[in-house]
Length: 239
Image (cartoon, rainbow, N blue to C red):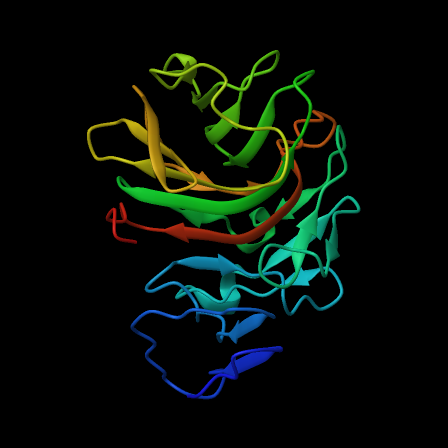
Protein backbone atom coordinates (compact mmCIF):
# COMPACT_ATOMS: atom_id res chain seq x y z
CA UNK A 1 0.00 0.00 0.00
CA UNK A 2 1.39 3.38 -1.01
CA UNK A 3 0.26 6.39 0.99
CA UNK A 4 0.39 9.93 -0.30
CA UNK A 5 2.73 12.14 1.68
CA UNK A 6 0.00 14.71 2.23
CA UNK A 7 -3.75 14.71 2.58
CA UNK A 8 -6.06 12.07 4.02
CA UNK A 9 -5.35 8.36 3.51
CA UNK A 10 -7.60 5.39 4.20
CA UNK A 11 -6.41 1.79 4.29
CA UNK A 12 -9.47 -0.48 4.31
CA UNK A 13 -8.84 -4.04 5.53
CA UNK A 14 -12.46 -4.81 6.38
CA UNK A 15 -12.72 -7.58 3.81
CA UNK A 16 -9.31 -9.17 4.08
CA UNK A 17 -6.99 -10.93 6.48
CA UNK A 18 -4.30 -8.27 6.37
CA UNK A 19 -1.01 -7.96 8.16
CA UNK A 20 0.56 -4.56 8.84
CA UNK A 21 4.16 -4.23 9.98
CA UNK A 22 7.03 -1.81 9.89
CA UNK A 23 7.20 1.90 10.64
CA UNK A 24 4.60 4.33 9.35
CA UNK A 25 5.24 8.07 9.27
CA UNK A 26 2.53 10.54 8.34
CA UNK A 27 3.91 13.99 7.71
CA UNK A 28 0.52 15.67 7.51
CA UNK A 29 -3.15 14.85 7.20
CA UNK A 30 -5.07 11.94 8.69
CA UNK A 31 -4.47 8.20 8.32
CA UNK A 32 -7.49 5.98 8.98
CA UNK A 33 -7.14 2.22 9.46
CA UNK A 34 -10.52 0.53 9.10
CA UNK A 35 -10.05 -2.80 10.89
CA UNK A 36 -12.92 -5.32 10.99
CA UNK A 37 -14.48 -6.00 14.41
CA UNK A 38 -13.48 -9.15 16.23
CA UNK A 39 -15.84 -12.10 16.22
CA UNK A 40 -17.46 -13.66 19.31
CA UNK A 41 -15.03 -14.45 22.15
CA UNK A 42 -13.64 -17.97 21.86
CA UNK A 43 -15.72 -20.58 23.71
CA UNK A 44 -17.66 -18.03 25.76
CA UNK A 45 -20.79 -19.56 27.28
CA UNK A 46 -22.66 -16.27 26.95
CA UNK A 47 -21.86 -13.21 24.88
CA UNK A 48 -24.20 -10.22 24.66
CA UNK A 49 -22.93 -7.65 22.15
CA UNK A 50 -26.17 -5.57 22.10
CA UNK A 51 -25.71 -5.13 18.35
CA UNK A 52 -28.73 -7.14 17.18
CA UNK A 53 -31.42 -6.57 19.80
CA UNK A 54 -34.96 -7.45 18.67
CA UNK A 55 -37.57 -5.67 20.79
CA UNK A 56 -36.43 -6.47 24.33
CA UNK A 57 -34.63 -9.70 23.38
CA UNK A 58 -30.83 -9.67 23.45
CA UNK A 59 -29.43 -12.68 21.55
CA UNK A 60 -26.77 -14.82 23.19
CA UNK A 61 -23.93 -15.26 20.72
CA UNK A 62 -22.03 -17.65 23.00
CA UNK A 63 -21.86 -21.45 22.96
CA UNK A 64 -25.06 -21.85 25.02
CA UNK A 65 -26.93 -20.31 22.11
CA UNK A 66 -30.46 -18.99 22.00
CA UNK A 67 -31.43 -21.00 25.10
CA UNK A 68 -29.76 -18.20 27.04
CA UNK A 69 -31.13 -15.24 25.13
CA UNK A 70 -31.69 -12.43 27.63
CA UNK A 71 -34.41 -9.80 28.12
CA UNK A 72 -34.15 -6.05 28.73
CA UNK A 73 -36.17 -5.58 31.91
CA UNK A 74 -37.97 -2.66 33.56
CA UNK A 75 -37.18 -0.19 30.81
CA UNK A 76 -33.52 -0.99 30.22
CA UNK A 77 -32.70 0.29 26.75
CA UNK A 78 -30.11 0.26 24.02
CA UNK A 79 -27.88 2.87 22.42
CA UNK A 80 -25.82 3.01 19.26
CA UNK A 81 -23.08 4.59 21.36
CA UNK A 82 -21.68 1.47 22.97
CA UNK A 83 -17.98 0.77 23.19
CA UNK A 84 -18.17 -1.40 20.06
CA UNK A 85 -21.44 -0.78 18.27
CA UNK A 86 -24.57 -1.03 20.40
CA UNK A 87 -24.74 -1.03 24.19
CA UNK A 88 -27.29 -1.45 27.01
CA UNK A 89 -28.42 1.65 28.92
CA UNK A 90 -29.34 1.62 32.62
CA UNK A 91 -30.82 4.59 34.49
CA UNK A 92 -29.09 5.46 37.77
CA UNK A 93 -31.02 4.18 40.80
CA UNK A 94 -33.51 2.23 38.67
CA UNK A 95 -34.42 -1.47 38.55
CA UNK A 96 -33.40 -1.72 34.90
CA UNK A 97 -31.28 -4.75 34.04
CA UNK A 98 -30.66 -7.63 31.63
CA UNK A 99 -32.63 -10.68 32.73
CA UNK A 100 -31.34 -14.21 32.18
CA UNK A 101 -33.45 -15.78 34.94
CA UNK A 102 -36.35 -16.42 32.57
CA UNK A 103 -33.93 -18.48 30.46
CA UNK A 104 -32.94 -20.59 33.47
CA UNK A 105 -29.91 -18.45 34.43
CA UNK A 106 -26.30 -19.24 33.48
CA UNK A 107 -24.57 -21.87 35.62
CA UNK A 108 -20.95 -20.85 36.16
CA UNK A 109 -19.33 -23.83 37.90
CA UNK A 110 -16.21 -23.88 40.08
CA UNK A 111 -14.19 -21.63 37.77
CA UNK A 112 -15.64 -18.80 35.70
CA UNK A 113 -15.02 -15.40 34.15
CA UNK A 114 -17.27 -12.37 33.75
CA UNK A 115 -16.09 -9.43 31.64
CA UNK A 116 -17.67 -6.26 30.29
CA UNK A 117 -17.07 -2.73 29.11
CA UNK A 118 -18.86 -0.09 31.18
CA UNK A 119 -19.30 3.66 30.80
CA UNK A 120 -19.76 6.04 33.75
CA UNK A 121 -20.09 4.06 36.97
CA UNK A 122 -23.19 5.06 38.93
CA UNK A 123 -23.05 7.13 42.10
CA UNK A 124 -21.78 5.93 45.48
CA UNK A 125 -25.13 6.44 47.26
CA UNK A 126 -26.02 2.77 46.77
CA UNK A 127 -24.47 -0.61 46.09
CA UNK A 128 -23.80 -1.25 42.41
CA UNK A 129 -24.30 -4.81 41.17
CA UNK A 130 -22.88 -6.00 37.86
CA UNK A 131 -24.04 -9.62 38.16
CA UNK A 132 -26.29 -11.47 40.60
CA UNK A 133 -27.65 -15.00 40.72
CA UNK A 134 -31.07 -16.16 41.91
CA UNK A 135 -29.28 -17.94 44.78
CA UNK A 136 -28.30 -14.48 46.07
CA UNK A 137 -24.57 -14.39 45.29
CA UNK A 138 -23.40 -11.16 43.62
CA UNK A 139 -20.35 -12.28 41.67
CA UNK A 140 -19.25 -8.69 41.18
CA UNK A 141 -20.48 -5.60 42.98
CA UNK A 142 -19.19 -2.23 44.15
CA UNK A 143 -19.65 -1.05 47.72
CA UNK A 144 -21.92 1.87 48.62
CA UNK A 145 -20.13 4.94 49.92
CA UNK A 146 -16.95 3.97 48.05
CA UNK A 147 -15.78 2.29 44.87
CA UNK A 148 -14.45 -0.88 46.50
CA UNK A 149 -14.80 -3.94 44.29
CA UNK A 150 -15.93 -7.17 45.86
CA UNK A 151 -18.23 -10.17 45.86
CA UNK A 152 -21.33 -10.79 47.95
CA UNK A 153 -21.10 -14.40 49.12
CA UNK A 154 -24.57 -15.15 50.45
CA UNK A 155 -24.35 -16.81 53.87
CA UNK A 156 -20.55 -17.08 53.62
CA UNK A 157 -19.36 -13.74 54.90
CA UNK A 158 -21.73 -11.54 52.87
CA UNK A 159 -19.81 -8.66 51.18
CA UNK A 160 -16.14 -9.51 50.84
CA UNK A 161 -14.17 -6.53 49.51
CA UNK A 162 -11.20 -7.26 47.32
CA UNK A 163 -7.74 -6.50 48.68
CA UNK A 164 -5.54 -4.56 48.38
CA UNK A 165 -7.54 -1.64 47.09
CA UNK A 166 -8.79 1.88 47.66
CA UNK A 167 -11.55 3.13 45.38
CA UNK A 168 -10.08 1.41 42.35
CA UNK A 169 -12.88 1.94 39.89
CA UNK A 170 -12.91 5.25 37.99
CA UNK A 171 -16.21 7.06 37.69
CA UNK A 172 -16.20 8.43 34.17
CA UNK A 173 -15.58 7.26 30.64
CA UNK A 174 -15.22 3.75 29.23
CA UNK A 175 -13.38 1.08 31.20
CA UNK A 176 -13.08 -2.69 31.01
CA UNK A 177 -13.79 -4.86 34.04
CA UNK A 178 -13.09 -8.58 34.52
CA UNK A 179 -13.78 -10.91 37.45
CA UNK A 180 -12.26 -14.41 37.47
CA UNK A 181 -13.57 -17.00 39.92
CA UNK A 182 -10.97 -19.54 41.02
CA UNK A 183 -11.38 -23.14 42.16
CA UNK A 184 -9.83 -22.19 45.53
CA UNK A 185 -12.90 -20.05 46.35
CA UNK A 186 -11.34 -16.68 45.53
CA UNK A 187 -12.09 -14.04 42.88
CA UNK A 188 -9.52 -11.93 41.01
CA UNK A 189 -10.40 -8.52 39.56
CA UNK A 190 -8.90 -6.73 36.57
CA UNK A 191 -9.57 -3.12 35.51
CA UNK A 192 -8.62 -2.16 31.96
CA UNK A 193 -6.69 -5.41 31.62
CA UNK A 194 -4.56 -4.87 34.74
CA UNK A 195 -4.84 -7.03 37.87
CA UNK A 196 -5.92 -4.86 40.81
CA UNK A 197 -7.12 -7.04 43.70
CA UNK A 198 -8.63 -10.33 44.90
CA UNK A 199 -11.51 -11.29 47.17
CA UNK A 200 -11.28 -14.19 49.61
CA UNK A 201 -14.59 -15.59 48.40
CA UNK A 202 -15.84 -17.04 45.12
CA UNK A 203 -19.18 -18.16 43.74
CA UNK A 204 -20.25 -21.45 42.17
CA UNK A 205 -23.95 -20.69 41.65
CA UNK A 206 -25.36 -18.89 38.62
CA UNK A 207 -25.93 -15.56 36.90
CA UNK A 208 -29.52 -14.38 36.59
CA UNK A 209 -29.33 -10.58 36.30
CA UNK A 210 -26.81 -8.29 34.66
CA UNK A 211 -26.36 -4.59 35.40
CA UNK A 212 -28.41 -4.49 38.60
CA UNK A 213 -29.70 -6.40 41.61
CA UNK A 214 -33.35 -7.27 42.16
CA UNK A 215 -36.39 -5.07 41.46
CA UNK A 216 -36.66 -2.12 43.84
CA UNK A 217 -33.09 -2.29 45.10
CA UNK A 218 -31.69 0.47 42.89
CA UNK A 219 -28.31 -1.26 42.60
CA UNK A 220 -27.75 -0.10 39.02
CA UNK A 221 -24.14 -0.43 37.87
CA UNK A 222 -23.33 2.08 35.12
CA UNK A 223 -24.89 4.22 32.40
CA UNK A 224 -23.92 1.82 29.59
CA UNK A 225 -22.70 -1.79 29.41
CA UNK A 226 -21.29 -3.40 26.27
CA UNK A 227 -19.63 -6.63 25.15
CA UNK A 228 -20.76 -8.61 28.21
CA UNK A 229 -19.15 -12.07 28.34
CA UNK A 230 -19.42 -15.13 30.61
CA UNK A 231 -16.98 -18.04 30.46
CA UNK A 232 -17.39 -21.36 32.30
CA UNK A 233 -13.66 -21.28 32.98
CA UNK A 234 -10.94 -19.00 34.28
CA UNK A 235 -9.51 -17.26 31.23
CA UNK A 236 -5.76 -16.80 30.84
CA UNK A 237 -3.93 -13.47 30.97
CA UNK A 238 -3.49 -13.45 27.19
CA UNK A 239 -7.26 -13.46 26.75
